[in-house]
Length: 220
Image 1 (cartoon, one colour):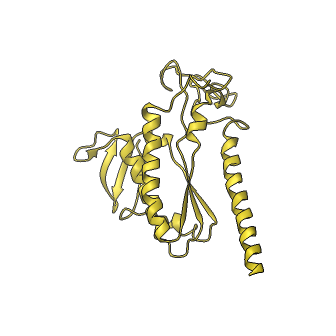
Image 2 (tube, rainbow, N blue to C red):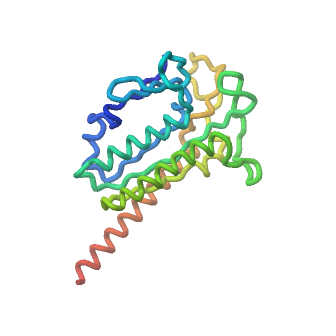
Image 3 (cartoon, rainbow, N blue to C red):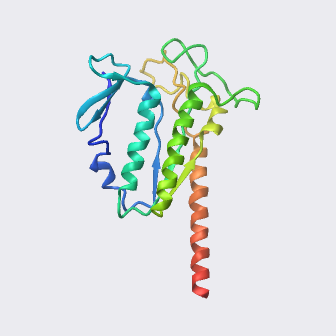
């Protein structure tokens, strides 16, 4: 069955947007789910699809839905009158299948990071990454006019180098079918913890700037 991505009038559901107006930070991220069958709706009417072959529905590629998802989320945030927080876009997280795709015997047996000359940001990973970056750059200009701050939490380049960070065949419960390797999700603890370190550093610097501004204000 296709995973249904729905919007009302090209906007996010109020059940999501109504919760974030008082947030200090909002993190937007999406990735691997956009490779599966999807149906896109506008005003509750299906208008396009990905890997679906439905009559009278326009077929689109993976990147179309990916870009539309970010456009819709960013539009919703910009439309919130009371929202004054920082919006972070966490970039695409690459998979590391070798020896075939996930359903054709692919696995991720490496036990150490790639060397500098072993991995490049290219192919579909580069296109997913650039799709995000282009949408981010476009909304960043609009956000500035509203006095909002949008930042890029760029994890893609670091994670491309870490084929050793996935559970491979060892992320299943003892009774689960372990014939399919997991080279998409990340081990905990593992390289994925770096994302939290990036975020923590941003928040810490924000706190330091806030304290510095308060001190300057108290002296004037």
